[in-house]
Every structure is written in C-alpha cells, then in structure tokens.
Image (cartoon, rainbow, N blue to C red; front, side, top):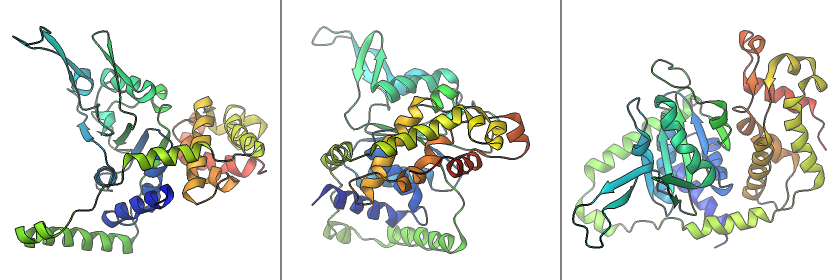
Length: 331
C-alpha cells in the first residue's frame, strides 16, 4: 500500500475516536510528516490529550506522557545518572532515561512547570539529543513533542518564552465543537463505556487487534514530501509573508500598528515544511498558494508579538495573519 494510503488510513483510525476535530487530526499528521513539534492550545475537555493518544495508539511507536507541575525537575524529564552498587561490569553510574526518550511525547500542560524544566525540552526538541552529566544521548529517528496548554488559566503557570515558542513547528488552536458534533461525542463516549462493561473475555480473544501503522510508512512519506516540487514563485510567496511580519509598515497601516515583532527564519522554514506536507496529504506533487494559506495561521500565530494597541483593541494573532494574507500578493 502506498504511503499516502497508509497515512489516510491512520487519519481515519484517529477519526474513529475523535469527533469533529478533523483539522486537529490533520495538523497532528502534518507535524508528524514534517518532523516537527506541536503546541496544542485549548480549554480543558477539548480532546487535546485524546487526540495525541489516538495518534500514538494507531502508530507503531513508544509513547510517554509527562504531566508538568510546578515541582517538576529537569531530571524528571531527561533522566539522570543512577548509582548501581555492585554492578557486574564495574560501571557504578548508569544513565536512567527519562520519559523524553520516546517516539511520541505528550508534554501535558507545559506552562505549569518553571523555566528550567521547560528548558530541559529545548535541546531534545531542536537538536534531537539530551546531554546529562557531560554525555550526549541521541533521540530515536522518529521523535516529536506534542505540548498542551490552557489559554485561560494563568494562576500557577509559567508562560513559555518566545525563544521556546519559536521551536514549535505549529501552534494549533482547539475550539469548542458545534452542537451536532458534541452530541456525537456523547454517543461515542457512552458507547465506549458500554463496550468496556459488556465485553467478555472470549470476545476479546476472538477479536484480532488491528496492526498499527509502521514507522517505515512515516519515513517513506517524509522522503516523498522532501522531493515534492515547490516552484520559485511559491518560495518567494512564503518568504514575503514572513518578511511582511518584520516590515509591516510596507504592507499596511493596520499591520504596522498591530505587529511589534515578526517571525524569525524558522517561520519560513516551517511554512515550507508544512506546506509541502499539506500538499502531499492532498494527493498533489507540487505546492500551491492554497497549501501555504491553509497552514499559515498555525505556523505564524505563536511567532508574532502583538503591540499594546492590538491587544487593547482585542486584535488576535489570527486576525493579524488573516489581514496579512489579504495584503501579500498571491502569485
């Protein structure tokens, strides 16, 4: 089966346990295919953790969850050197890997931990390695951090600094589901509870579990995405969008009033990687403006520092990106 068919099958499997969040599923898959880390932001109960678990459950991978709390220590994330008394090989100190050593890592409520713990993720997210006691330990080839945070509750939280926010490939907003989807959520969870209560041991043995999607499929998809055609006009379009966040006065009066600080070159790189993954998932072998416009809000919303005037006027980062896309000429 072709890699695209396998990824579509993974999307369908995830959709069986997540109702009305197709965009979130697509963004998780784009992050996986683009080899990046994602920040999921939404109010409690909007299936952030469930979405990540659905991805890990249906993919051949090691999954770990780190619940970030104010008393968490960096060693609780990365691991530490442990003293082993009477070791047969003569080594008295051995490295005990922390939960960061997995393929899919859920950093739950990342903004509840202090800066030194958040910083423990930086090397793993950017360099795909962890250094403990002077020794560097490499991460697995398939590795991604999916962090969640609550946008409303501020007491007892430590907002992520801009430097760390920039390391996330995309910032995905999760909104309340519409009425019809919420009804389906009620039915889905009720059905799951009934199945757990009524399922007999014989039925469990008779039901063959589905094989998870192999990691080789992800690597094959990444190779195909890397070879996707991106015309020079599309490259100029992406670079111009990011450039407009740095020199907003050249593009519009409102942008000049709203943007305090624009995106770094990581924004351009993220646009390119995500646009190619988006086009590949749509079954195309080339990037067009639709792909760039579709993922621009998720790539840019956490990379823009808004002015006091914008915040005072209730202008959001999404409003700024929408205005930006109307002002930058489409090739």
